[in-house]
Image (spheres, rainbow, N blue to C red):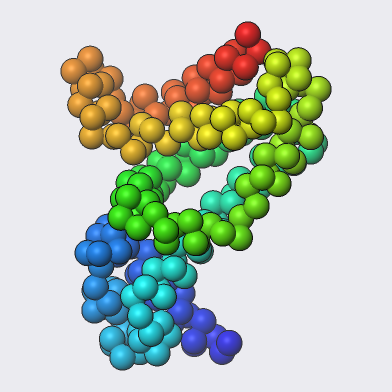
Length: 203
């Protein structure tokens, strides 16, 4: 792909990501994306014929970046405790930089669950659970956690990280009443959540 075309495509992806995160699939307009990317609508349709096609491309790109960022969670050289600490530090930091992402994903799951399932069809979650378990089999068995429990364990860990962002409006309101700043709470959560999980599984 020529450099100019690559730059144009990059601008489209950046603009589309911003518009989709802000307005969701239903609220986004191709004209809004074209305007933000600094191109005309005809050129946008040259690269992506439909909004549906562009949304799928953007969602897949986001998913790929997320999995790439958290690949060290499956590094065999890290201990279970190191992985838990790494995950909360990096994942919460990632959500601090991308606060609209949890709401966007939850809205799209509610709106069109079949689309999300289709977009995730190439991710072998069963293999991911099994890989994680094999890497830490002795540690997990010591805590009476079986391979069958891995979806529960991993999804619980992810939920602890995601929930404050997905329910920010409510949580921020509660914290305000007790004089706690939301950003300070989130920063402290990186360490607190890791300690909480480590103690929970080792009890």
